[in-house]
Length: 287
Length: 333
Image (cartoon, rainbow over all chains, first blue to last red):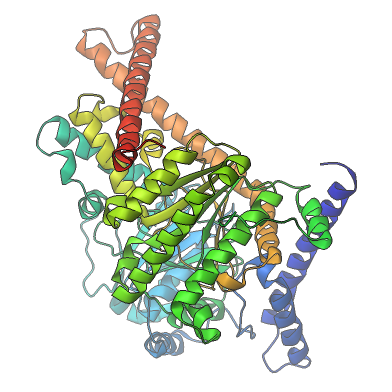
């Protein structure tokens, strides 16, 4: 990279990065102010203008309701009621939601909040993914954080919302569990497909199957990374990287991918906005 | 040439192209050309017109890509799921394909001049026979050109492609060309329809939908995904630049993620090989922590033998595929 073209390129990218930072700062400021505070309308205008300007460059989902929001609605009882009705108010809710973090340093507390909100709103299957496998390696720390948040956000009525941790081999199945969680990493993606292929080839070598037996359905059934889970309907992707970074390539063929700038200090409003956006999308299934 | 619009960039376009080209450029771009039907509705014309316009836009986009130095493009022209559409629409699309392939075959000189290698990827036996024959002619006629590459996914879904790759490896095992333990991610890569192409650096989907719709799921796991709301027939040079800018902004993060993924893959393969060698040594009665030279030699031998098996298998696969096209073209190109 040299000469005038190189300089211009560097200037262009510096400008884009600066605009992105400005947009994030504006949105953060907006969130920090009360909805009816003085000059809140000005912040909202600035935020939506920057979204319109940067939406293509940032690629992030433009927040239509970038209103101020406290992270936790006041009081567990109020929160619970609101969340259940929020879920019911949507035209459609994903059956399986994937939470994909592309940022280098994942936050257990924020991920736990997201998981608990998913449960509260009525999502049956939840998967958590980061491309470094950090959540998977520190599974128990994530679980502890989730249980803690569950207590905090859902109060004493926990039993109705118990989450089943699909990764654990523990026999303590919880009754009335309404959500199941899986923590995934890249080895559940391509590597799982390869494992299934190896197993099938082993059967062929032992003359128990023939190669013509293998079709899309057979291969689908041989995959084990998401046993019992339907394919994800929705992936919320957090962070600046515009890629799924190896998240369940086979399973995401029809998955809606909604991007959010970050999972750090994520608010319930942002989470719900994304769900709202998903509820409005139309699937034609190839027809 | 009907598939690649003739012409050069305007002055302003060239100026911006020069700035963008100062940064890293994608070598292979994939397009999901979505929005033809919505465009037709918007303009109050027949759906078929929308698809025609879509093809014209493809020709124009290919020209822009060449002007920007992007030498490989893959497009999603027709999904296996699209067979579910009305007979009228499917027949219309097949007619469009017939028309375009016949036209393409009349432009052999132009194809040669531009060095365009055309590949058609998909479950081709699902298509009408005459279209299969046209495709075979186009593919065979251009197979040795290498200035630029156009991959058209026709009667394609990614799951079918991945299953087909696994089936080929199973065929290899059945033929005695492969051992089950030879099956790996890199071997699967080489059995996909896209085995002659690097993974796409950038995947662009138009019309505002934010899903992959069963397109190149395996190959785009670490690609830059750009979803743009413009309808495909309205795609502009600036939309393309915008997508490339996003690619450039993601470049270092994606490189890093890809490199660490490949490193992890290599490490796991190494571990598997070591385990295999340990087992073999145990079978031969040597202590597993014994003679390290014996261990190294055994590892080298096993790796070399595996490489040989894989080369033999891939050659057989190549022959099988070439055979398929040649049988459709009784008169050689």
